[in-house]
Image (cartoon, rainbow, N blue to C red; front, side, top):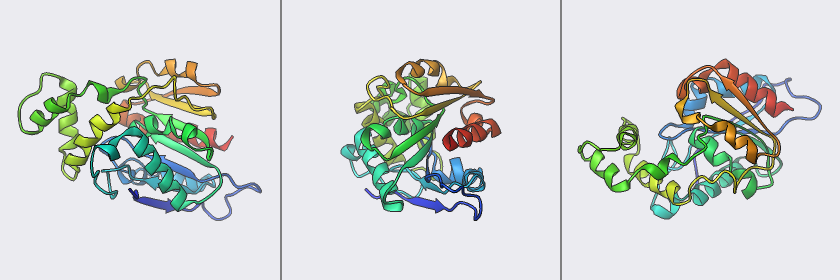
Length: 245
């Protein structure tokens, strides 16, 4: 699966004598690279800091292809697709990654899969696997109009059936990711990693426990709920500064 990407160059004259690597941007579930990053000015902020960027749409999101079947929805398959998208856009050399929510959960596993990943800035990450709590059968009934007993299922059904969403792909992705659940202790990145959590974000509760798995990790709390934290100037400044170290 070839994922959709958009590339943004650094501003002329902003690079140092030793240019820093490009930054790959990974968005959240049921969002897109455009909605989470491009529309909110992340590429421009990175360009002003002398960084080029690669905005990637995850499988079944944005302009990327639909998910063909369950095998393409597994975590390992999505990780492989992300790395292929980076390689096709920037064939060699180190890469930094900014991931948010699902993008952060996936980026956590990238360094173990590729030596190219240099540093990570991950926001809105839950220390647990939220998709494991979603029963696919109950989700299917909710999409058909039957009120679910599990409020998380109802929330997911509303997210993936929003206008413009590829509902079928996203419904396939949920159990696919859950089949290879987030296991932070087993797959902890060995590269410098910044964790960013919104002060009012329930999804990030307990994120500090992830620090125990990181040999070189930091945690910054910023204003905002799950979406507000991504858009906060504090997150943007912290991530750009950390990746420049």
